[in-house]
Figure 1: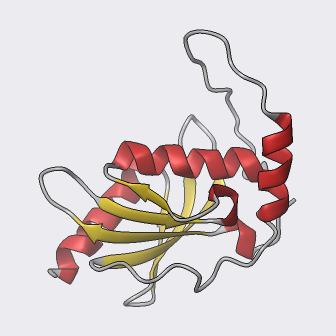
Figure 2 (figure 1 turned 45 degrees about the vertical axis):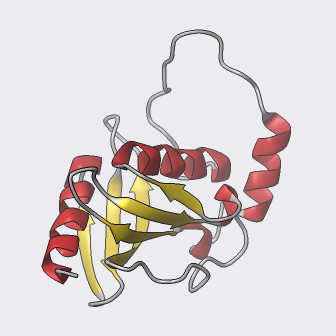
Length: 144
């Protein structure tokens, strides 16, 4: 199992508007900074991290059309990289910066906590939708 620092993902929000949230996510399992231009890309990046470090364990398997590729070598490399420390590696977001820690993947969603770095406020969330609402409200409150 990964150590405590490897279980946290830094999310930097650089812009928001009618196109949604735009920014960067950082975790060693993602390699260089993973940019996202909408919430779907961010969620895909986060799921990639969870699958790479095998934490938190998913309570359901993802289904998809077509055949799924097996990438055991790449997964092992990403898991080894995930042992690095994550705090302070990514520059802060222009709008807001968050440290997301998903502790459970149950009922086909995420549960955990998010820290708004600029205000050092921590909030618990019970679903991915609740996490989005927390991030949106913080970005709106920052008003930059």
